[in-house]
Structures are given as structure tokens and as C-alpha cells.
Amino acid sequence: MIILQLIENVWIALLLFIFIWLFSWAKGILGSVKLAVLFALIVVYLTFYQYQELVWLGVIIFFIATFGKEILGKVKLFRSENYEEMMGKK
Image (tube, rainbow, N blue to C red; front, side):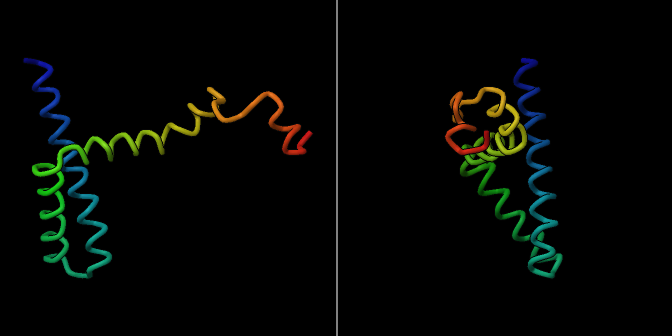
């Protein structure tokens, strides 16, 4: 029961964050506040109520973009021990 409430609260927070972000972006691009609100409402409705998987895909992409460089740098998945030698840096 508590977990469902937590998920619902996170869902509402994501909805508000994405709506405000889209609105501010669309207001700058479209130049009209009414068109920006309409655009943001349509995109948020389609994203949150029709294609809910896109919300979680966006969250995953955000976390990878934010924390991915540090994590992959520590794990060294794509670099071998002799990477610097191969690239001529040593």
C-alpha cells in the first residue's frame, strides 16, 4: 500500500516536471503561451496516458546521461589495460 502511494507520488512529480519543462521549451520555440500550453498538454497526455513506457525510457536516459560517464569510467568496460599505449598517449 505504501509502495503504491510512493509510485503514484513519483508519477505525479514526473508529470509536473515534464509538463513544466515542455511548456518552457515550447513557449520559447512557438512564441505563444496558449500554443505552448496546448502543445505541452497534448504531449504529456500522450506520454503519460497512452505510451507510459516512454516516461520510464526518458527517466533511464536521464540517469545514464547524468551518471553514466562516471559509472562507466570507473567500470572501464570499453577500455583495455593498454588503451593509452594503443592510442599513443604513453
